[in-house]
Amino acid sequence: MRDELAGFTIGVTADRRRDELAALLERRGARVVLAPALRIVPLSDDTDLRDATRACLDRPPDVLMANTGIGMRGWLEAAEGWGLAEPLKNVLSRAYVVARGPKARGAIRAAGLHDQWSPASESCEEVVEHLCRRGVAGQVIAMQLHGDRQPECTEALEAAGATVIEVPVYRWAPPTDPAPLHRLIDLVAGRLVDAVTFTSAAAAEALLRAAGDRTEAVLAALRGDVLVSCVGAVTAEPLVRRGVPVSAPSRARLGALVRTIVDELPRRTVTVKAAGHLLTLRGHAAVIDGELRPLAPAPMAVLRALATRPGRVLSRTELLRTLPRGADEHAVEMAVARLRVGLRAPRVVQTVVKRGYRLRVE
Image (tube, rainbow, N blue to C red; front, side):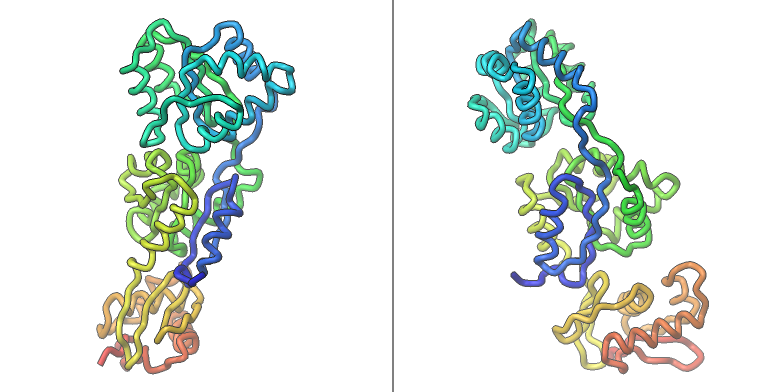
């Protein structure tokens, strides 16, 4: 497989299936930063789930909203443990079954049930609109929750005359170790990652919540230099609402998400000719005459500043602003020296005596 993403650093905020997503990105050459924003945990006390299951048996639902594959499987497995799996499947087999996405549909069919409809957008809002158009007055709807409650969906269905049984199977919780998430937030704010991936809206909300007083700095980076790639439109919603441009595949799949990144990231690179060399800037590396040259953050920051204004002399003071806080003008000289060594092309960066440095473009 080609190294289309070599030289790029990508943050992965997923918990479940994070290793699969990381492997897909790494096979294409990316450097991956794993930083789960949330984790899915089973309900420590299954009383609510058992009560919801009993409610479905007492008042067989007219409609089943199957929101996630993991949720439906977990519900049926729990029912199996209580000896209620067959009675539950029996009542659900008579319901009008809506599968919000392909994973939910797969879990429904694996259980021997039949789904009648799925929304094109895979959004709960579209499901609610469909059911309300179909008519739900006087009906019982079993809503398998995915993580947190969605009161707006429940309230809309109840306002249309339905009785909603919420079925909680798992919940979101903060990551066991929050340090990787806070490190990713630092990297995003410092524009030291090229892209961040999200596979759930809850993870996007959690990252912004964890950013605290750095939220505006993170949003500024996500609105400009850092590509935000979401698995689908539902996942992207909290970011779109905050003015963050988002790339998302038409089908909510990890493979499609990776292909979207492969298409998008290389288009955001800067390419210049300098001192007879063709130079392309990637996240933590430069490609010079087709050869990848990984660079440390300080030399990369200097190169990026020079390449965005090729041929123009930038003073040490101007370049100093691109380096980490606390650096001095000596640090600029060190970064330039390391840049020349790292590129293995010392003539690319020219010293202009008493003025500063420039990219040699003649």
